[in-house]
Amino acid sequence: MKNKGFILPLALLFAAGAAFANQQSTKETEQTREQKTSDASGSSKSMSHVVTGIVKDFKPGESLSVNTANDKTRKFDLDNKDVMTTVDPNVTIGSQVKVVESTDENGKKMLTVSLEKK
Image (tube, rainbow, N blue to C red; front, side, top):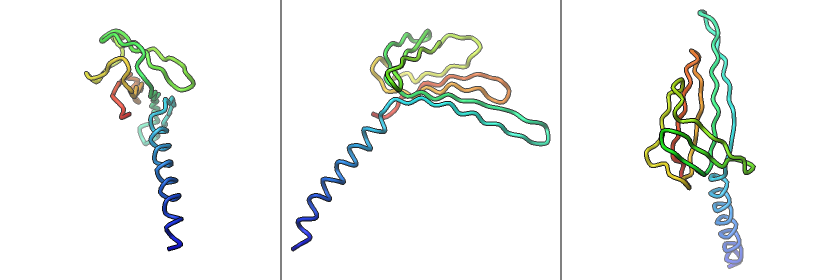
């Protein structure tokens, strides 16, 4: 009988934790990662910059603006001929997206825009 008084607060704590975790997973973020590798043929470097946020403005084939961490807005050029660009066809204004800008070890630049779960 003593355990009944303990179960309800524990259940509420668990529910609040789950709600907080879900809220945290939809936050806007921005991070840069650089990777250096070396082997017998020499060394190489690749870099990626990942942004998650809400689409503020979107002109297919032209540009994309995303609200990111700390209320910053990042604008991405989607028609740069020197960058291989891939955009999920379901992206619209208000979508939560993940934008990955990367450069491989050969210097090839890529930009990938995909939908994120809310």
